[in-house]
Amino acid sequence: MKIINLLLRIYYLKFFRIIFKYIYLITGKKPWSLGYLSYRNEVIEKNIKSNFLKYISENKLPKKYGFGLDERIIEYPWLLSSLPKKAKYILDAGSIFNYKFILESKQLTGKNILISNLNHERENHNDMSISYLYGLYGDLRNIIIKDGIFDAVVCGSVLEHVGMDNATIYNNNNIFKENKIDDYLSAVKEFKRVLKINGICLITVPFGKSDDYGWFQVFNTEMINKIIRLFGIKNSTVALFKYSDKGWKISNIEECRNARYFDVHKRKGTSLNRQAAAGAMACIKMIKR
Image (cartoon, rainbow, N blue to C red; front, side, top):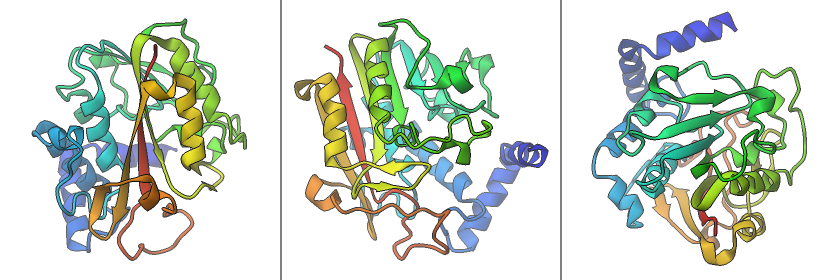
């Protein structure tokens, strides 16, 4: 653990991030190789600082967008462009925003953010007035917050882990070593409970052919529909994005139905089209009425 913390401290130094990025570029831009995260995060940061968000909000993507990059390249622009300007109190359910360059974005300026996560965060931003819930207090199926507090709940690539074997990826002494594949619905019910009336819930999950990887699962149409029914079909919209050899593109159910996840932990090497993780993404926007 001390070695991991040391490596993370080194990574967060700008000098080393630049070195890692160039190593990634020189060695062929292979997903998850040394420097991949530095390169990916730099691309995301450039996008959210530019006028790029208008593309995603207008359902447009440039050609070859995000080629060789995982779904974060879709999630951050979509989440930030979908977050209402008037939303002041935000629950980050699973800690997708807990990066300084994200928290400093103009879309989050002046927001009161509570980050809820099973594991403690090595990168902590209490100096930016960010609040945290950890461990049992961070279980999204039983949020220890009273009803109707938040203007928005954001859950990016986390719902697929709820109820699964989180002991594999978190240092929690097997507290959350589970296989309760329907518990994601309990979390969504909690999101609705802690939202104010007219509050917005933003969820992103890997989409395509349903599959159980143990530590997470891929959502299919039936599972997405179960989520939507909790808020009401009239109060919900779903945007689908698919990865291909031409990068990420806006898509539809038919194209995404059989999309498969590339699990770098189980498959050796690099996928043929440099798919880094999800083959498709479902981005769900719901309003509490």
